[in-house]
Length: 104
Image 1 (cartoon, one colour):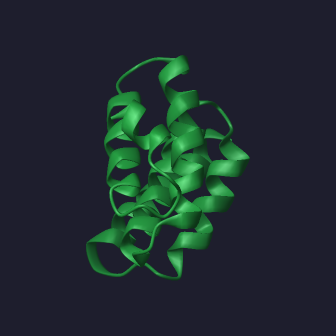
Image 2 (tube, rainbow, N blue to C red; image 1 turned 135 degrees about the vertical axis):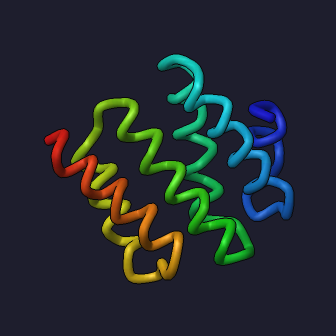
């Protein structure tokens, strides 16, 4: 997934799903995987053609940043997502934001 996420051009319909899968694997891995996930998510979060893909990539990017101990960046990004979240997503995001705030 990592290779696909890096090789596909920005905006390609499969680039965001590849970035999401890369992030899911990285969140279970170490720092090197997180750094790669950060890079591919940052691109996909800006260039994905579907809003849901962009939002999903941004949420995963916030999680990756938190794992990299970049809590301020993770919190800032998560807070920008809050206005677009509803229902279960909003609850999940609120829990994530609360965990970031308590870790600071």
